[in-house]
Length: 240
Image (cartoon, rainbow, N blue to C red; front, side, top):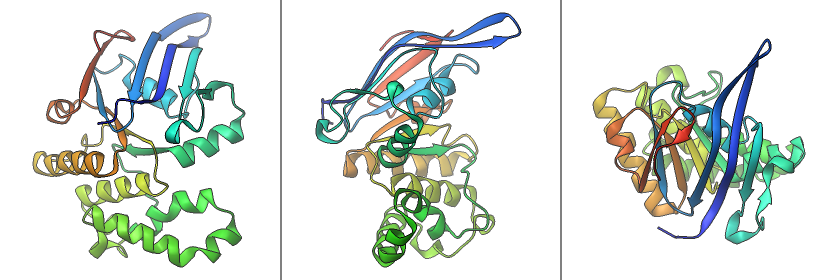
């Protein structure tokens, strides 16, 4: 594991309003994510785990705080992602981050291969994607092979098991060579045996690709495999 910090959160607060009542969810969190590490965030439902993950992944915005991103070999030079415009944030989310969710979120009308290609379709213009399609399909097939899904590349999500869908979702998350992959309950919809195979897959990918994984999970087996395990309670970390 590389000790260099790729992403930092400082003083992250998130409040929601219901009528005139302010409900604090995150209460000033600090977090450093090092290059090539696995971090698990654990705690009971409602403590703010998924809210934090969504903020880190630029799917939501904090009420207060900074998201300081150093990026590929420091190329982003400690940019505050929260200060960027929506278009730039979307580009960074697509290029620098990957996402894996409990319910996969594969598009049902696309094959496994086509689902994996989606991030590259978003990254490139239509003409560039067409010109590079053969190259990008080869890359997607290589990723599917890495996660053990190449023989299922032409299958549609409804033809795949839960574990196969999650493997395809992980492959999709890796398509644009992200620096950080955010996983929200990646084994929450899987049986014990399949969960263990996903555990091993995440460990192997982290080791081989030096990608950082941030895991929100109730799965103690998965949480305990992380380099760091951060318990949350009432919108703060209990320890780090």
